[in-house]
Length: 439
Picture 1 (cartoon, rainbow, N blue to C red):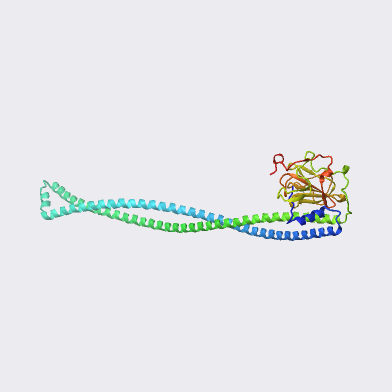
Picture 2 (tube, one colour):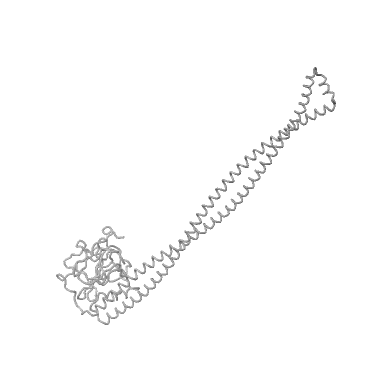
């Protein structure tokens, strides 16, 4: 089934099909068809060159974007390494600061203990001084009489000497105790000053480390900000690259379509040129028993849309159906109905993937809507009757899997059914989704 294009491609398609299939049109008409085809090929080639130029520019832009993306990724990796180094340095600062704080706390405990000891010594010294003052005051009040009385109470010379030594020892002992307390106090005071100096040194070191840590934190913050900017820029560049890549695919698709179109137009022009030198024929060429070979396996002998006038299955508009639709499952083999040369093999307007074979005596056969990648022949190739040339599909303007088979004699479409008198065709109303699984 196909949609007859009446506006955009109607005149052009009719000219091309007539040029390809006709072998008996007048030289003037064929010359006009050839000229039209040549002009169209020139226009298509100009469009193709434009697409190719766009593709070249697009590839250049893709290369630039890829280079920028690679550079940004390299910078990102370097920045991540730098931040890792900052994190390690900050962790070391934190560890050193913690160690210094422990040392400061230990020194502070020592200073507190020594201060407490000094306080105790100071109390002892104060008590000793008070006792010594009492002794001295008592001695002053009583004069030497008390000491003399102690000495006069001696019972012997040795006792006197002993008492004198005892009095001296008491006085010396009291003085020694006070001197010892003063010395201990001085030593503790010296230790406190030393520890306080060490503590101050540690405090200074910790302040230095904290200052360096703050500077390192600032650097790490700047590095993180730059990394965030890199990530944002990288996302933007990647989005641009993805869009350019999508445009690149679209341009390549357009180039492929235009290349196929040019090949089809060139084939049509060549066929028209060959046809202009062929003698006119008034009847289809003889075949085996005057028949064409059936283009599908014998199990597919039903017609879903006959030759002649009908309502378009797609638009509903009135049209002339220039062939017959033979429904068959996807990938069903398609065979050449007659010997001849391939003049079209590829996408062809609403016919989709199409093959046209030009035979001798003004006969041409058309095989439309073939599956993607199914066509087995190329333009210029000679084929023989019964040779597989493709497979059933539903490309182009089609609503189900089928073969649109057309026969032209001297540039005029004729009903293909007349070539198969031995086949009792059955007519069905459209292609059944249950039977052929089209979507």
